[in-house]
Image (cartoon, rainbow over all chains, first blue to last red; front, side):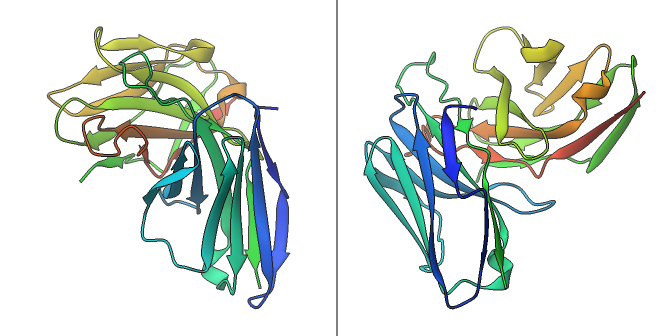
Length: 117
Length: 117
């Protein structure tokens, strides 16, 4: 669809479960991101990886654990979540460069809709 | 700190009429500005960006946006709305000078556009 694929598209989990969200990009980009989208709130940047190294972590609770094994794959491991963590989790990728022409435009996946019971 | 404000939760416009979706930002220095659109059950898609140069930028699907530095605004416009333009629109900003500014894109809460036939 967009070059960024997220699975699963929908996930329902209990507060004691452990699950993972997966993201794969086929664009050859060098940076990958997790954003959280909740209704009527700004998108929240959670994690950023560049060349498989985490470069940004916006005070996200430790029940969310990211993993970036290579430049094409990004995971978000979920453990003992709370009902308020229910949201759409969006993965994105971009090609980051130093010049102005880079701009770092994000390409998003369709998202994983998470419901925590 | 960087921030983006989209003052309208929803904008309603009749098909064929011009539309405007408002965005103001707060960032020191010269920002990079973006508009993204989200259709139902899809991720965000890039529409247009302002990096430097002409204050009026043109993007996909006939959309354009005007950068106004004195008013710190970047409103999205289209001369003639289509029903198919109905979607959720996000304004975003990045300060390329900040330490990890190449990665940190900040989004507004989104404005839902309804175009009536």
